[in-house]
Length: 142
Image (cartoon, rainbow, N blue to C red):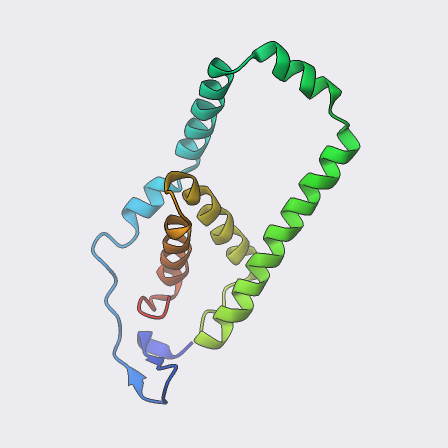
């Protein structure tokens, strides 16, 4: 990435002016991605679902689940998400975003988490973009 926050326009070789970070510089996003909030919301949603459903039927179904198939599906899901994060990284690298694959994986999973709170994928896309830009200070491109 160019020094000083300057970038190159996708359409031409004209340098872009340094971008100013938005007010608050990720404070709300940091709060929304805090581990205690994720765990609390997850536990709250799980408790709500258990309270609304038939716990005995849930436990019967859980006991009947084959662990080998469950693990295979879970690993497949994680591999699919990792592949998506890798593709996202490949698309972002030519634009000057050179974080590690691990960082892209973290951003991708935070985005998936944020998708739970909106009726579409906009919240996750916005969250991923903000996290990506926060570490590069290249707001307009992200």
